[in-house]
Image: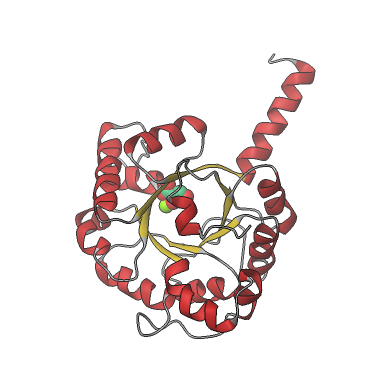
Length: 257
Ligand code: 3PY
Ligand code: MG
């Protein structure tokens, strides 16, 4: 059976189970998919992952049947094209401030006439199972350009950002967003202003017919964000999963003392 596109999977009846990789290890990322994550994002912004290991990680996720997502470092839109070439099906751009930022990112994500993505998707063609022509003509629709809303400027320009052609949706970073909204530089995921801002982002993004994700970090936050109307929320990172499993294993042997 042919795998549904990422766009179709995100529109499915059940929210996609999305994991997050910070560690540069294709086998660990693949293990997350085999354990039940349906998509994994590899993080080139805050993770230890670079362009050297990213292609193997994207390939490992897809070989295990998962959807391969990636986040680029701030402003490195050129990396977005390369990650698409190596098999990313969604690229997330952090710290977008304005519609001009979103337009610059979209131009690296979409082939002409919609953008200026340069042609060279050898590995993406292989992984898609399509002919080169079929990949080229479907890529603009099947790969998703997602901008992060995590600054006051992005909130103020949300409507204009959502109207940029080629932008397929948004992803909220609640840590940066809550720091930006605070008076004292402290993150506050549970603060009413953070939650209200996120609810507005979800509402406006859905009204624009676009995908809306959030960084979840744990089950309670995932439930909260899905309840606010987000299409998907990431559940946990590889580092947190290892730390949690290590604590649980130790507690099982020694008790909670
Ligand atoms: C944020 O919460 O700011 C993020 O970017 C999550 O990684
Ligand atoms: Mg952030």
